[in-house]
Length: 195
Image (tube, rainbow, N blue to C red; front, top):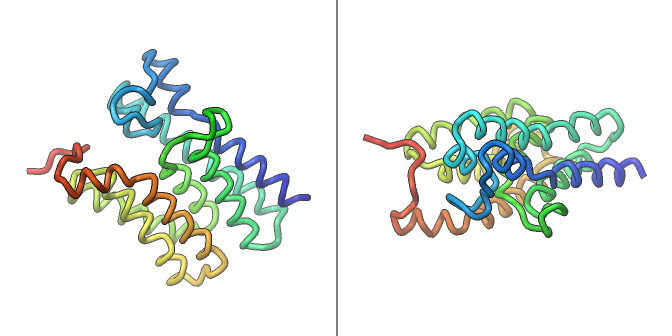
């Protein structure tokens, strides 16, 4: 019962579309219909300004982090805790408040794994930011984060988290499939202008 409670709570919290709420209240824009048509921090920042993008990033990160942090005091199984993290991530991707549609869940994944395995997740974040700096593409950073996640869980000995890390990697690649196609065609809009 305890696991079910935390998993459901994590899913509902993960489902809250903070990007949509912030963009609509701040600048009257529905990010699902403008820009990249995504409710994530990058699109909100492009449409409404950096401070609103940062606010979206913080909220999406916290909705992954908080359920894991609180559930850790109640759940003895590391694998069960990782499933709570997965519930929050899937809540963002399949939001019950948006007809089971949602965002790409990168920030929520970052928050969830910071709660599960702080230092390995932090290394993944550094690799992500380095890739964004090198390529100018946030999507490249996100894909790097996704790829490095199961690898860092393995190298750090967090074996119980590897199954969920692999699932999340696949989900993030699936959610970035259009970005991958644009990158392959050289049509992906850069966040940072290189050169």
